[in-house]
Length: 393
Image (cartoon, rainbow, N blue to C red; front, side):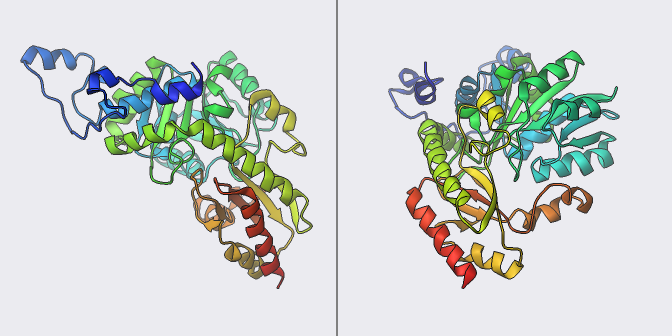
């Protein structure tokens, strides 16, 4: 069946729920058993048995099955946050003394986890590369490399990596691959079909879509996910709550419609900004002017609502005036919800990662990130237009 139909009905059983068209919330911490032998049998396969809701929960499981079906994976595991999923996916493939290769414009907390936390706590090192060519990865690989971590498009500058080329290289050397696919969602990009081992998302963004869920997910082969359930997920305890899973089930029903609207709104705004005399580079791979547009067409079928642009203005008071003058575009750090947001990445990234890496990210003081929501695109353009006027007044 098509995405729309699967997201509506897959993994649900109205007949087993007295005909309820919406699955109930299993808001319970544990499950009881009729006998010694019954619970003993459950403990023989804890990754597949209802024992305790830190492990498997019926409501959470419905959401996981829908996401796995959507992404073309065998199984998915939901976490309490995007970073819970990201850190668990990374830890699944590495141990003390191993080496990781990733892109330099990876999500700030992920960059901090790879570049600071893992070396200091676990003796695991990371090389950060540009990632625009396969040679970047080839040159960074060492005999200790066990993982290549991708984020395509990457944070803030929205640069792409050639996913199929990277996975082919990795497989030839026995290296695993993980990708953060939050930006595109499986609606517009399908990394598992391109050879990726594990796909991660911040569910807080487009999969949730209403700015009322904080969660993450890992999708991949059943063997990998089962191992993660029994190790990283169980031992770190980053489980998703049943109520949030129920909200996610609701959100997934409209994912296709929302992504189409995010895409069309963002393109209208991005094209308007490209023509504005006070705007420099507009960073959105779906724009024909993007240097990576051919790669975009090769491995993606659409683009989302998140992109960035550089103001030509360099004076901080005027940059602040532009951001502060926006009304429909509210100031906020997250993205992927129904509402439109504006943010200057330099505010937080300079605090999240070491200065030497920040200077290499290609981010300016006037780099502005927009998360284009579901409002009328002409209203959003009008809001930006009056913000430019305020900046110049």
